[in-house]
Image 1: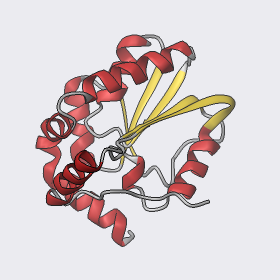
Image 2: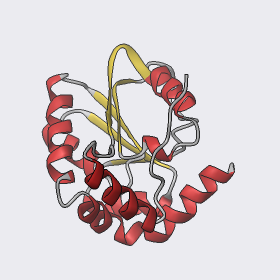
Image 3: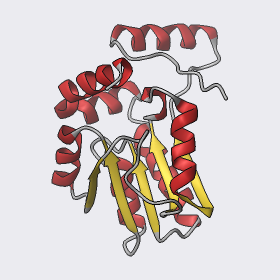
Length: 175
């Protein structure tokens, strides 16, 4: 396991029980509407199979399950602690796996989603390549991610808040 993966595993494993509350607080509760909107977008694509990567406690996968009751929704995460919480919340298909090395065949899914997880992957380019591999040729990718505000004072406050919680401020994907 790489250093970045080990840090992510240690950090999120230690906060798994408080993860949902942290997300809601950091986003001031707006993450609910972001996930709802993401689920509506995916629903409009009419997928039969979806892999939600870095599913964490399953909030996006569960929103997708609700909107697409007949679709196969796989919630994928490399932390068993997170997947256990997702199962307790009702996730039907948890998959313990690393988004950098997915255990699915080429073209397995109509859609791949990742919410607030891309920034925690060690190599964005490689991860996006792996996502591309498992998406069908006419499939879709939805990425939901935080960004820093453009207003200088809000940007400074957000950066300070993120750094004070030992979260990574930004991750640059370079192709």
